[in-house]
Image (cartoon, rainbow over all chains, first blue to last red; front, side):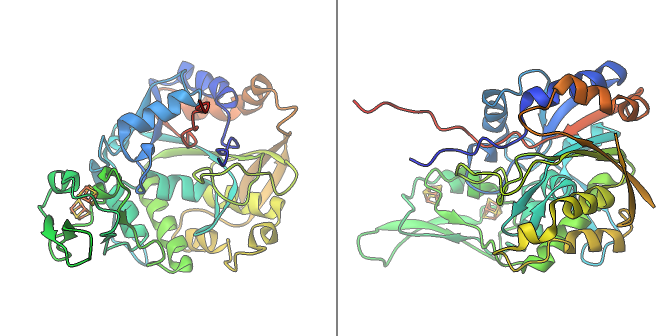
Amino acid sequence: MRKKSNTHLKPEWIEPIYSSVAEKSKDCVLMDCTVLYNSPRALASSHIKVARDNGFNFAPIVIADGERGREEMMIKVDGKIFDEVRVGGALEDYDSLLVVSHMTGHLGAGYGGALKNVGMGLGNKAGKMEMHKAFRLKIRRRECIACEKCVEDCPVDAIKIKSSRIPGISESANIDQDRCVGCGGCVGTCPEGAIKIPWTAAPRKELQRRIAEYAKGALKDKNALFINFLLNITKKCDCVNEKQRPMTDDIGVLISNDPVAVDQASLDLIGKRTFQLRELIDPEIQIKHGEKIGLGERKYELTEL
Amino acid sequence: MANVYLWKTDVDSIDPEELAGKLEPFLEDFSKNRRIALKMHFGEKKKQHTPKT
Ligand code: SF4
Ligand code: SF4
């Protein structure tokens, strides 16, 4: 059995930061959204359980897009790709975002830091579908057991169980692509993991730009501060299903009120080639696009604390 | 030009209280009277080890 990653941010590093913020603020919660893929984190209730099991027991947790990832607020962005983005609805209740990110490599987005944490991380399921351009979900008929869970869950009745012509399979679920509104709910609902997301529909460069535009939406009119942990820097992100070894030495913790600058400084300190070794993807696309759309500046002055 | 601050540390020697202390001047202004969401990634589910019988 492969061992699970244990290189995500440790709760004991976050608790004193949380306490300090909670003491001064009116209200402070830990926040994330549901994920798009089939995982316990696809539903808010089991996502919270994962967080608690991983030691995040010291604060209230809000999964901003609700139990099935459908709660949303639409935010206008003056982007190059999006006019509007779809983020977790509970974000509306908070005027400030403290974005705590673990810098890692990322197979699709080049790297994961503040921009990805806030952009991809705060998109609701439909928002994540948009970022991935995953507009046509596929059902692997051989994996479908025709349990009808997705049929019951689909808000627009886009899924039907139909008889199958595949030998040995009498019936399976089918998605009516014209009806599907891309909410992404069925992916996490399927107990067999039979509903597949076309992860590569958005070319990687475009995925990075889409993430930056979502970050712009999530941060709109918010008081925000960004903390990047450059510790346990792994090649893949904290979602992967494997134990990873750090790929370079620890550096420390960065803080800034500029999400573009904090990611640029993180990449400069790590060396962008570290993440580029086998992935022929320029990890700076997110950052460059972030600057282009007015999220922040790539030029920064680094001061040691 | 943006300002970025670095506290050098590593996983073996990081002292969380010291970290919070380093961040305190930044958190002071940021937090006052605000409603704050601390955006996190909580990690993935840990597999339970089930002994073979
Ligand atoms: S993604 Fe489409 S098919 Fe799946 S639940 Fe949402 S609307 Fe229905
Ligand atoms: S939830 Fe999954 S297994 Fe059940 S009918 Fe839908 S696709 Fe098939």
